[in-house]
Image 1 (tube, rainbow, N blue to C red):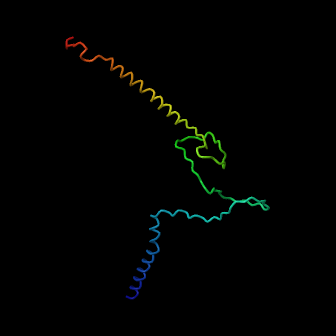
Image 2: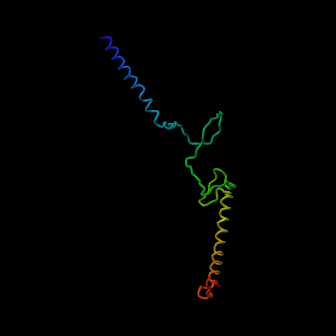
Image 3: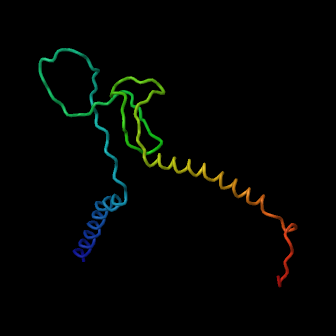
Length: 143
């Protein structure tokens, strides 16, 4: 009898331990993965001096102040009158976009704008020239 009780007790303890160990893995499957954590980087101020020993590094250089330039229409950059790193004042041209699809749409809308007033004018003139019912002679069914 003692052997049976010990065997049952051992089985229950093993099942509980297995559930405790495996439960986090079942919960983690439904979670979204965590984003990568940032890496610490040492930054130094730039200075000019002669270099006696050469070294090469792989990395990215970023400016202290980033500006994002966003175009309101889709297109392809056709001209860049300024060089990279050159200072620019507010309102100065930084890039010239070529947008043939947008230009075609502007031309189509301009043509529509110019077309419809003439159609309206011609229709109005036709209605003005049309005789009223009172001035038309009455025609019966047999006429």
